[in-house]
Length: 221
Image (cartoon, rainbow, N blue to C red; front, side, top):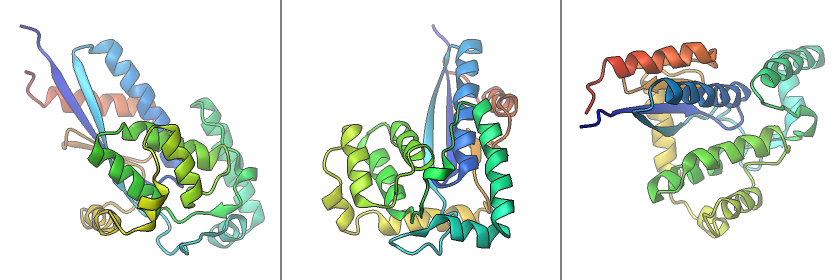
């Protein structure tokens, strides 16, 4: 009888968090290495919302002025962007900060991810599309029009009318409150098989080690 093992990775993130995008790519690489080393392992990701900037107006706001207020000025923002661009390039992430003009409110994006998981769509594909839209294409991922385009592209169909209602609004807000009550104060956060938590966009080797250790602590079937 073939021995199999399963890995569940809970990912707590926000689609406007650059370190979350970087962490997502590093997790991809860690899982690819895991598949090569442990082909008997199947895995799935579960996405949990976190509002990085919960005070963002519903319509969003100009991005650069917000960043300069938050980080202390233009020079500080430029230095942060240069560092992220350098680190991101090493992980295959092409940050295009010059294209980002709007700081989006991410409630609708999180709602769409929640819906995807509830309805059996591949939420990983949606999350990747949201990251790319925001950080590489400079699109407003809080806009129903942008989310409509993304939803159609991945086969979710017409989502704009759904977003106009309030479905999943409270569910998403409740999940954000829940992870904060559990002690999560920054993202990304990765939890492997409910046992080992890794905070931040850690190197691939760190994520792979956490995955391996969580599997060793879980019974195979």
